[in-house]
Length: 421
Image (cartoon, rainbow, N blue to C red):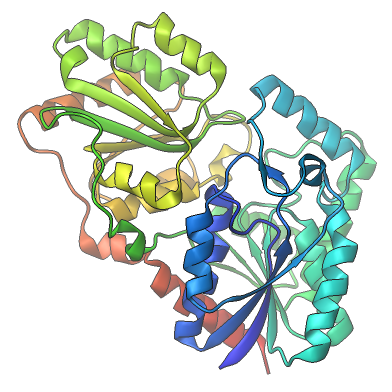
C-alpha cells in the first residue's frame, strides 16, 4: 500500500458539491493500492454540513489531519451553519475578497497547513502529494511541501485558476500575482488533472511544461442504495433540482417556463411538481408566488447528500442549469455527473461548452439554452408528452458506468503511479 497526502480545504463534514470529488477519491483509493491522509481544516462557518459524508470517509479508514486557519469562515466559530447571502451581497463580498487576497481568502490557512503537513511528512513515509482546488491556496500549500520534502505532486483542478470565469482582477497586478502563483505550483507539479477539456486547454496554454490530464467528475453507486423519495402522488410528473444557485445560475427561467406550461396545459398544474432540494435565492422564492406556482413548486431546503440522492431517485426528470456568462463554456458541474448515476432523463439548461459535451451520448437529455424561456417551455412540453404516454427515455448503462467513482479512483491511482519513481 502506497501513501498519499491529500491537501483539501473543503472536506466533510462540510457539505455541498465542492467536497464530493475529494471525499469519494479518498474513499476508494485504498481499494486501488493507495492509503490517503487528508490535510484539511477544522471547519468554521459554512452554509451546509453533511456529517453522514464524514462517517462514510471515516468508515473507509481514511486518516484526517485537521488544522486551524485564519480566514473568513473562522469568524463564525467552529462548525456553524451560516445563511447563504443574497446574490448582490455575494458578488460584493467576492469582489472585496479578490481585491484583498491572493490567490484567495483562504491564504490564511497556508501557515497552519504547512506546519501540520510538515509534521506528518517528517513522521511518515509518503509517495505522493495530491491537492484539489479551489481554494487555490491549497495548491500553494501542496507545492511548498512537495519542494521542501521532495515528494512528487499532482494538482487537481475542479475549476480553472487564472482563467476562471468567476474571477475578477481589479488591477493588472492582481492578474500577474495570480499567474505567478499558478505558474509556480504548476512547475513544481509532476502533472495536473482537471475535469474537462476547456479547463485542460486553458491550463496547458499557460503552463506548457506540465502535462494536464482529464479525470471527469462522477457518481458513487453506493449513494444510490437508498429508498426513492417522491414527495408527490404516483400520477405526477416530478422534476427535481438538487443543489444551490449562485452567480449566473438561476432557477428563474425554468420557473417562468413552468408557469407558461401550466397556462398552456391547465391540467399540468395538477400533474406536474417541481422540487428544489438545496438552497434557492429569496428573490426566486418570491417569483414562485408571483407566478402562481405555490402549489406546483416544493422547496425542502438543504439535506444530507444521501437524502438528496433519495429525491433524485424519486424524480421522473432531473434538471440543472449553467448560466450564460463569459467563460461558461468551461463549466461542467459535479451535479450533472451525479445525475448520470441516477439514470433519469435530464433537462439541461446549458450554453455551448463542456456541460453540453458531457451530455453527448446520454440519450435521455433534453437540452435548451439557459435563458431562453420559449426553448425551455418547448422542452417541458416534450417531457410532459413523453411522460403522459409512458415513453420517457433512459440513458445506456455503458454511458453511465464510465463515470463510476470506483473507476475514476483507479484512473487517479494510475496518475499517482505515473508521477512517482
